[in-house]
Image 1 (cartoon, rainbow, N blue to C red):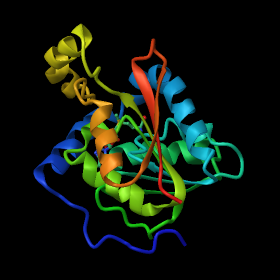
Image 2: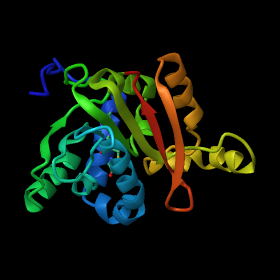
Image 3: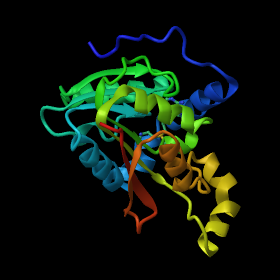
Length: 221
Ligand SMILES: C[S@@+](CC[C@H](N)C(=O)[O-])C[C@H]1O[C@@H](n2cnc3c(N)ncnc32)[C@H](O)[C@@H]1O
């Protein structure tokens, strides 16, 4: 049983409430807006995650757009703050008979109700820049991943320098409205990895035109 440490209560601060409210509105239209746009990045992230083994946690699984991309024999759990998003994920699992999905639960990624070392990898797609305390989420991912396991993030990360970086800083408030942060840089995650003895494997560009990136890390064995 993976879910040994059932959380007493998920954090319910104001930002959590706002996030739930925002995604209650997004849920009915989410797949129409994001499916095709995020599919290549989601597929690449899943492929990178399953290289570490079959037991995967999808953090911020949303409507479950990527649940169909896992190979047979995977064992996938998913968590999300939004029950409205998860309802749609559960419907997909039923409709498509995705028998590798073993539970979709409401949970804050900063307070995961799983035992230490429970997964071969944690994958989080289009999540990390939405979390008010991303380092707390990363630390939870690290805790539930086994030694040698992976942490894979798919996201847009802002440029570290140059004119594009300036533009991204300017459009940041707009991007935040649609759920992306354009000025969150992968160097912030790299710094967290360094502080925590996590191997930073790298950041690879993906569709569209390198706008989304796949960031990979490995927990020390
Ligand atoms: C942009 S959507 C991405 C959903 C999915 N990963 C995808 O790629 O389609 C972000 C998701 O993260 C969830 N989320 C945001 N903050 C969270 C948190 N602290 N804990 C769990 N889920 C969270 C939202 O409810 C939403 O479903």
